[in-house]
Structure formats: C-alpha cells, structure tokens
Length: 381
Image (cartoon, rainbow, N blue to C red; front, side, top):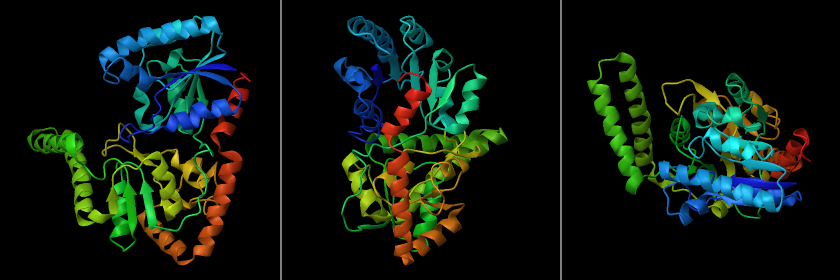
C-alpha cells in the first residue's frame, strides 16, 4: 500500500526527544513493505514557528494538511490516509476534504477511557476509528462513529533484551498521576526500594510554578466555595498533590526526571521487577471520579525488552498475557507488596515468568504483527 501518515512522533511531549509513534507506527509500516509519506506535526510546527495545538497552529495545519495530501495524492495515489490526530489538531471539515479523494481515513487514538473528548468531534467522520482500549468501543458507537480495536504493541527493533546487571530492585517508568504515588508509597514505607522515572515526580521551572499555582487555586476554591460537591472536588485534588509532594520529600533519592528512549530500555533491563499501573481516574484524570483500567504501551514494551513485568489485573490484560505465568498481576497495594517480596526472594521463579512474557510478546505483540492483522481486517492489504 501507499500510505499518507500524519502524526506527532512523541507519545509524551513532557519527555524530550521521545519518538514513540515513529517507532511503533511509521517504521513498522515500512517493515511490512508499505510506502509511506510522513507528515510530521512536530516538524510542521517548528518550520512555521507555531505553538503546538494553538488556534493559529490549527488554522495553518488545516490548509497545509489538505494541500500536501492532494499534491502527493496526484503524484502517487494513496491507498490509505492514516493519522494520529485529535480535535485539537483538525476539524471535521478537514476529514471531509480528505475523504473527497475517495481514500479511506483511519485515525488512531488512545487514552479514550478518560480522554474521549479529544476525538469525539472528528470521530463520526472517520472511516476507521482505531482505539487501543477495548471498552472505548461503546463510546464511539454512541456518537455514530465506526470503532476498530487496535491494541498497543511494541517494535522489537527497539525493545529487546540486553545483557546487563541489575541496578534497580524495582522500577517504574511513567507519569505521576491517579493512584500511582499511593502504590509507590506503600512499597517504600515497607522497605521495598522502588525507583521512579518520569514526568510529575520531580518538579522544576515552569512545571513547578504551574502545579503550585494550581494547588493554591484548589486550596482557596475549597475554602471559599459553598457548594459541597465542588468543595470536595477541590480538596480531593489538593490531597492527591500534597500526598505526592510529601512522598518525594521523604524519599528524595528514589525519584528521577523523564528518561530518554534509550535510557528507558536500559531501565527495563536493569530492573529485577518493572512496575506498571493500569488505573486511571475516569474523567480527565480527576480524583473524584471512578477508577477505570486500560492498557498502555509498557504492557508490551517491558516484556518485549526482556523485563519482568508486574501490573494491575484486568480482564483486558488477561487477553494478551496469562496472569502470574507471563506477567505478575496484583489486585491492591497489599498484594503488590506481597508479590514483590516473593519474587525478589525467589528469583528463579521470577525468571520463568520473565522468559514466558518475553516469548509471548515477541510472538504475538509486535507492532508489525498488529498492523499486519489490522490491514487484513480492514481489507486494505
């Protein structure tokens, strides 16, 4: 196929130089033998001196995206328009203009469990809404959109076992949000040495100023509002933030800034146990909403990299790995502590799970295999 691919390379823009989607979408398409015209949102933003996802960015992107697509389609017709775009990038009219060329449009999105609002306006006009969370299907159907489940995966070109010693007893690579700080506190307070890497653990500069300003707003809002539910909402967010800050002050040597893509692979390999957390707050990561569960990239990156993985149990995870045979699972912080201590005490048993998880990931959960099956399912290949 000849594919027009529009995306931002980064899976987390708080991590400098991150190229998650180049590694897990663009390059696997090339590996499968497809030709790809890549429209990079980061390059477009920089070349035009724009603020990413500002109103001016959105206006200029609309014209540039349609113009580029039509020019390239005229030179060499496309079989598929594939994107990772949100309502903050384009409007439904842009989708309509692209579809006028009779090229099917597939748009990928993730975090729909708690951020469905990011794509709900363009989704009804997309031919194939590729969603990574299985339970997001009903949300797309409810607005008249066509959902296609495309679970995360990992590219073995970048995620592979390395022969290294163990530098970390337990590690977690990821942002500090939802109940993650509470789990980490439970481990640290019980003498389990866990190292955390990622946005939100160490605050500095503009990020610290913004977070502290928001804390003061929540504090005064909780004090001044007369509406009980709103008061509890503000105080709940305040409690989460203050708990996290106190934890980091108490254990300053266990928290680190976001690692580079290359450092992430090293951490996975240098950790006796790698942690993951599937929990998110149900609406825009607000702590007063219900906890929900969804899979992330690390569910596939860590086993693919040869790391021993330990995360929350959920039914969707069990569709991809056999619990406690290919990955370690836990139901609460008490079970997490018990299992961490058990597998640190019995490394041979931990090694059996690590090896089984690696083989399962390599056989079934590569980015290339996910896309190959997707294109067959959509009758595009």
